[in-house]
Image (cartoon, rainbow over all chains, first blue to last red; front, side):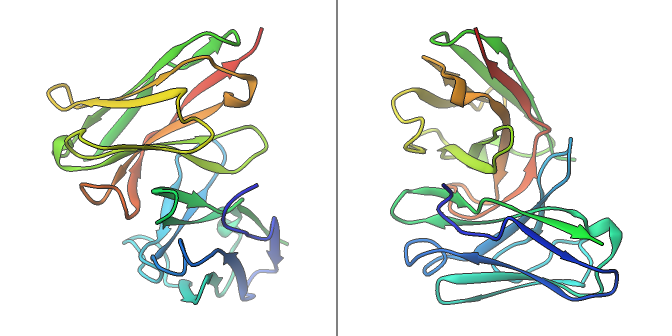
Length: 110
Length: 121
């Protein structure tokens, strides 16, 4: 049971707009920034969004992050087949003194 | 460039111990907090432990508290995870990750490829 709650799956057709939600609490998302990682089979996690809405260099601007209260979202516009992967949200938790992750969302491009 | 290379994984019987290592290069290792994160089969990412840049403070997930010990040797640019009394539920791919801060509250911009630990009789 993950501390942050994500839908287990999401899907869309090429070109569509898709969002992935991440729900937490006051001790994590409510008081800290949110980060998103992409995980492809056999590869290391890749930082996709940091401090809630910043994109590292190399991440397409089709990806954007936002936060409201104790929930966060990852939005992907103009979905492409290469976006198919598992996406995890994460945040520091002030009560646990560590990172907490969502359970991951498997994004499928139909 | 930043490189993190984990080693030390393998197949181990329940109740035994294992020590993982993470060799760092391409950056000033002693300036950054480091984390261990694991990915169990069929499950999601789970944060395991954090150590400050100078090793003065460590933090653990409740699931491994008292069982795992994180440490570092800044003279050798190496991070460790001592895992004792291993259980089947500790089976996972273990990643080391560099935090962007010295005390680990933020995010990781660099991860290793992981080392696989399998606990089985």
